[in-house]
Image (cartoon, rainbow, N blue to C red; front, side, top):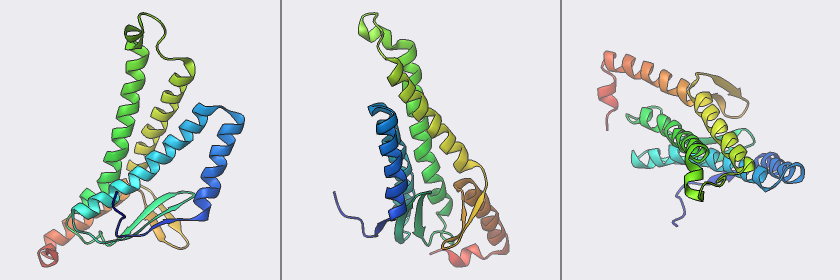
Length: 187
């Protein structure tokens, strides 16, 4: 695996909060709770790397990817790029694939799993609960990324959800296109 050309910054708050979740899941629950928290982390990290992959595909230089207690942030100069909408939506597409996959797996295992185990119960209650909670989390993550909203951070300034960025970018792009300014920004 090749090392990325941009730094990936892991803030101590990321390890403190998510480490506490993993320890609490292991202490108060069992191994499936730990697996749930780790799956949530996988989805969060994959979401940000989907944005980064879209930046790389479209030739946008990435300054860094930062992970903190509240999630991740890809720092890149993509807002004035022609492919900005594709970069914004890449994270939502990635999370939607997880949501659809876990939901389909849950429904399939609950409805047709007994055919693969000679009529015995194929999936236990704990595994069903794990798939239920992961599917529910990914669906909520898709919804929360699509709903327009802005969070004003002290260091990073306004941080918009992917849905708000996509909506805002389309408005700016339409205004620039109508004014003829987009043609001057095309590489």
